[in-house]
Image (cartoon, rainbow, N blue to C red):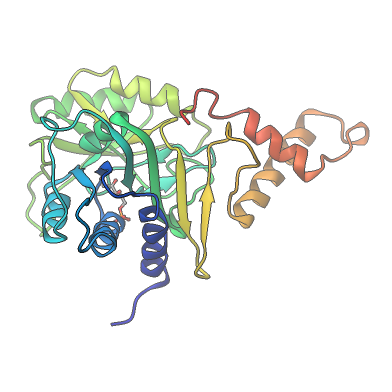
Amino acid sequence: MAHSASEIAKELSALAAVELVNEGATIAIGSGSTVDKAIRALGRKFEGSTRKPSIVAASKHSEQLVEEARLPLRNLDQVSDFSLMLDGADEVAPDLTLIKGGGGALTREKLLATMAERLIIMVDFTKIVHRIGEHSLLPVEVIPFAAPYVGRRLRELKLEPTLRLSPGGAIVPYLTDNHCEILDCRIPDRTIDPAELEAGIRSIRGVVESGLFVRMTNRVYVGTRDGRVEELRPATEPGLPRVPADLRDALLQRIEDARRSVQPSSRTPPLKKRSQAKSIRRTSHRTQRR
Ligand code: 5RP
């Protein structure tokens, strides 16, 4: 069977992330096709081990795969924190803000990520964006009774919500593992402050959780189109953020354009690339966990 470049890139990012999992660890795992690959890779990596990692999974589907991979499945009665969480994402912005929840598991994923020391994200190159909401809708999980009210309040925040429907053609709402509904929201094409938007959404009664993950990510492994894996780190970590070259160049160009638009060009020599990259680092992730 032929595999697309995106599928191969997902596989590569999953393999890179699985390298971080040690024998005897207790980890959390999210949901989605990249996570499926990571679970299978974990099964292969620890086959025959007497100290397999214990896993709490964010969806019923992932739980089933963990069992099929013969890895010990745990629940939150048995585990109170994790050394790390492996998960996928629908979008990764330059400051490592994420959109998650394409598979509907956003609430459990965010809960487990909060309990984990480090959140490790595995994506293919198609998930890297310049601004959050560029390609994906933002999922917001809601109590079904409250959905019409929440929809109106989301519109006041300038979002455009649509009720997610079940796959398969029937006109019935999609239900999460928590028996809640999802409003998928288009984010307007303008600069937003992700933390502000997240706070606005969460302040609406009836909202269970939003798929916006702000200042939670510790690493992103990006499978590239040409078969490599790039590692992105939060801006507060030592060393320059390692972003894919084309995205980095686009970012540097935007910063240069912004500088030109606010300062007289004749008196402002262009920045060297390194100092431009430093300015990216300074302006984001001030409170990033390590
Ligand atoms: C599920 C998620 C997934 O991680 C996200 O949708 C990415 O999925 P995939 O790995 O299939 O591209 O957030 O709720």
